[in-house]
Image 1 (cartoon, one colour):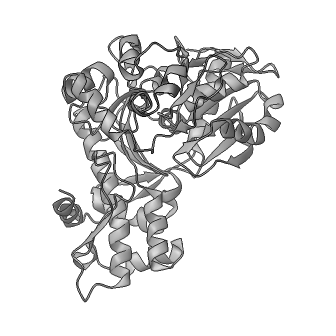
Image 2 (cartoon, one colour):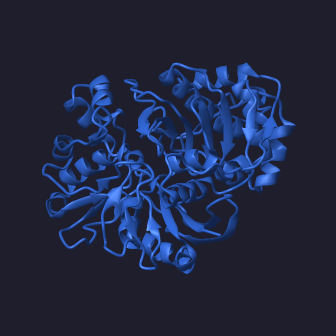
Image 3 (cartoon, one colour):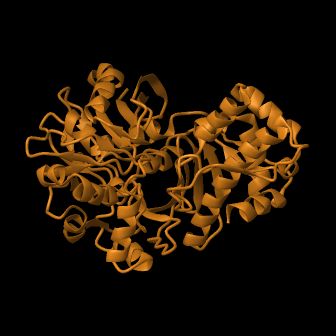
Length: 455
């Protein structure tokens, strides 16, 4: 039996799955936590990688990493970080993102050139922020990589620097037209040239070798890995409720959205992955539990005791600012509260706010793709909430599929590793299990009420 290792280096932790390359059966799973911050010393991720994946590497014939997108890992000419990495959810670069868009000629021109309209999350906006506010660090920066590229380098016995088009497409200096780096955009962001990883020429390329002799696949961004793990085909949408909320649709054409709501990312198979990402998702549930002093199960039970629309109470869940829509300085807000508003209504409004935010993301992706979703698959830690499962099909007005609970980013990375190990033209066909179909009566007034206050 050939074994492959899939690694998910997310905002919160590193997860490692040892998987049978032929069947996709999970043999062993390990994890290690990350610091809870929006800027992190990237060497902390190496420690977590060694803790979670290290004991499994000797058993793996191939390995791949799915990593959090956009994180700025800036290195000097010795390969040492010049500062802490800025994560995707660090919003201090919101102003510089606007600057870059204006300098490129406006939103439509930015989308045409880079695939996306810059927001604070995009790597090039973070580079410009460093240039403007930390010029000494910017001047010392010799190489810029993303979190998954940094881990690839650590795993590779030869210390190579390599990536894939999926993760590269989220930097703001990748050209969808040329399907590769745009060095002019690199200079535009940081003010000078810098080294970048080599982009794999095929999604199943063998890019390196571990010290234990295993093949290293290109790896990819976490959203691309999740799509690969779920086995999404054209028109399928994954709706992930993790630290962020993500709606991503597999497409055969380059999506260019001048509104900025949708990022025109590449996927991990040679296609494209139009994607809308919210900054706030599962932490909205954390917030609800905190202000109502209840656990997750009780929050769901309370929400289901209230009526659709929460008797007029509406929660706009932009607790940490927001990326989709692009409102980095926004805060969360309650509306429509009266003397008769109950704790159950507030619980319902909080979860409806989360689901409505996700519905916005799905709608943006459908608009950018010019087609309705064939299927919507609900994943991520927040999808465990009974109330989220109950309200999602009601708010979105269509059936929602709930896949078997698995770590789909790590599983997608493992599938890419198995693909690189086989060298075949298509990834292995793994059975990820039967999905549960969630259905409910449509409640369109909930989303209408939410959008009236969201503006």
